[in-house]
Image (tube, rainbow, N blue to C red; front, top):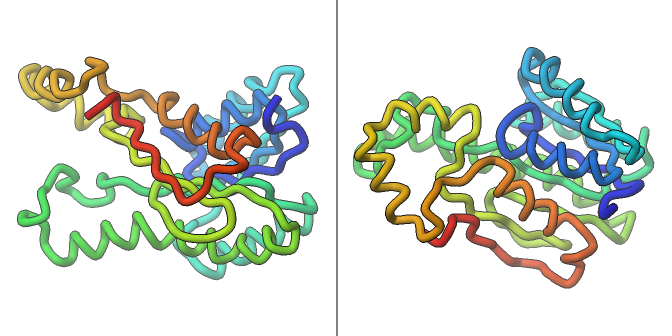
Length: 225
């Protein structure tokens, strides 16, 4: 079990890639701090994640918090580090384009306000959580950070997902015509679009000891697009 006795803090953990990642880690013995900003999603996800732990010894603690609020993040990291004695893994899973009304808009179609909203949603939580956890990991002289966007520091890697059928993305996928879906699949050498677990498995590799000598890397998880 790659994550036995590890403390993993995962943002956006109640659905999508974050939830899939939490499921793998708890099955492999981690204590998962599952952070989300929606209590309803947490109430649905946490019992399922706890059941997934089986006899691994893994634990799941659902935590309602806004990863885009600096004060909230600082308090959260301090409390987790103090309560559990360490934060071994940080997975920054907050991000995506559905934060705006036109998630498929191209750069030239975006308004500046939409652009600013996208940048804030995709970068601020990653910065705030990483900023707060780095001192903890430096004190420990160990730690893994996996982002859905890459930054420098400690043992940090990122994945670059293609379209992934999470709970947020699937409704937009289902609205596309069959021809549009077929075109997307056709341009993917593996001839399908990604599921959340496809991304989560790579995140868990990067977060495990298997990747101890891997840093500063972005892995495309795209099926070959």
